[in-house]
Image 1 (cartoon, rainbow, N blue to C red):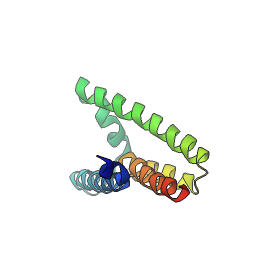
Image 2: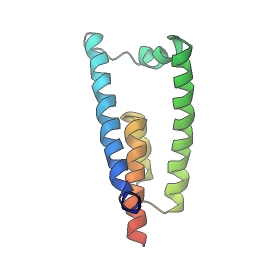
Image 3: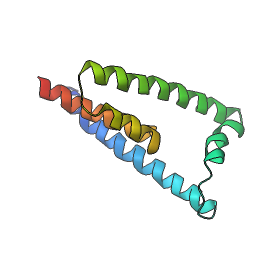
Image 4: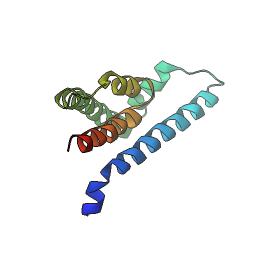
Length: 115
C-alpha cells in the first residue's frame, strides 16, 4: 500500500489520459452522428432531459465539478502553484475528466518537489 501512496501521481496521470481520451472519443462520435456539426445546446441539455437517471448523474457531475473547480483554485493558491488558470481552462475547454486529474497529477509533483 505504501508503494501505491508514494506513486499515486501515476494514478492521476492515468485518469487524465482516460478522462481526456474517452471524453474526446465520445464527443467525436456525437459530432459524426450530427453530420459533422457540434450542437452545444443539445450536448448540454441531453443529460438533463433523457430520464431521471440521467438527471441524477448530471446533478452528481455538476456538484462534483463545482467542488473540484473550487478545490483547484483554493489548493493551487495555497500551494502557490503556477498556471492555475491552465487547469481551469482545460476543465472548461477539454473536459473536467481531463483537467481535474491533471491538476491532481501536477499537484502531487509539486508536493514532492517541496519535500
